[in-house]
Image 1 (cartoon, rainbow, N blue to C red):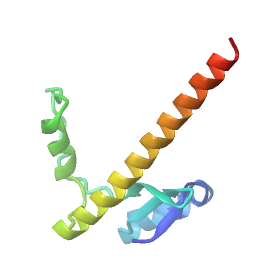
Image 2 (cartoon, one colour; image 1 turned 180 degrees about the vertical axis):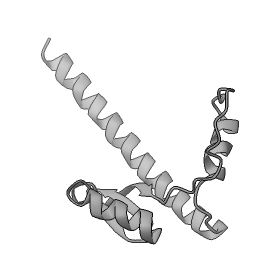
Image 3 (cartoon, rainbow, N blue to C red; image 1 turned 135 degrees about the vertical axis):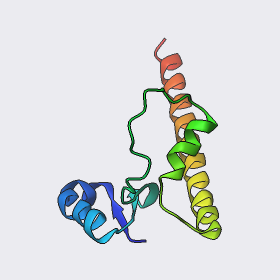
Image 4 (tube, rainbow, N blue to C red; image 1 turned 45 degrees about the horizontal axis):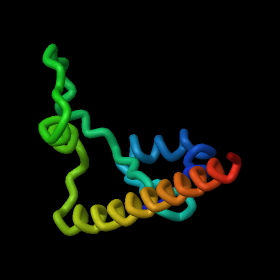
Length: 109
């Protein structure tokens, strides 16, 4: 699966979306070289209108995932590892930023 940085995605959005739409290409979107998302072709399944609102939680997640791209268990587990690592890094950065902000705030008093 090819990777595309956020800046490149912004600059080439029309071309990339054309490849996704016409060639069914899937992209890993990166931010500073780290995966942060996946751009996949829309499947079109399950697009019928419904009057019932979806509830949040696992049932809603199942509804979203059923229309997603089909991936093997191995691919799923590999993406899960990448995503988990990325989320852990984001949380660590957020925690560090919060601590630095708190230290700066306490130093200004």
